[in-house]
Length: 233
Image (tube, rainbow, N blue to C red; front, side):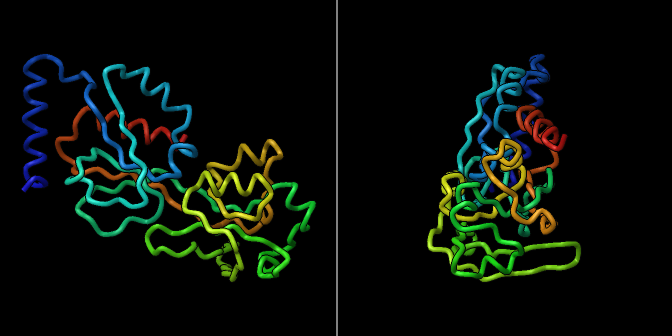
């Protein structure tokens, strides 16, 4: 019932705002279901400029491993990496980012640099595993080069479910990790991480924004969606 009534409630709210002459005002609280990877890799410092533009808007980011029930939990919008499942929600792709295989220079000094993806199956190398929240198991290690696809079996001893922990372990030289290029490119440029297989970086991982309805979108949600669209640039 709540899901069916929500668009009508929003329409009534906007009609009242228009009559009172404040329809262009962006105010209130925006509750965002956030993929744990998003804040550091996608939003970052850009968010400050957005909030300066809308001083009456309060944003609440809640990091979740899964999308959950956006409507019943009171979320206005969600940002999630990965392909969306069937849902009544509106799902719009924001961007695609490459998957890179990275290691710290200190790791390479200690254990050597692998020359091809298959070398990672060797016990001489330590691979850092990242747990897939949907399946509960570590993500498989894939390598894409055009239409060619290679899947290898790693023997990682350290598995994490937090992207910051994965990054910290990789930077510390604890092992090799697969991460999104959107959050690692500046570290590669600074020489803190090394892209091990630049010729095998054709795998893409999408970022989607979700919201309840195409009609009667509140002003606070509209401006945030515009902000998210600007991340493509």
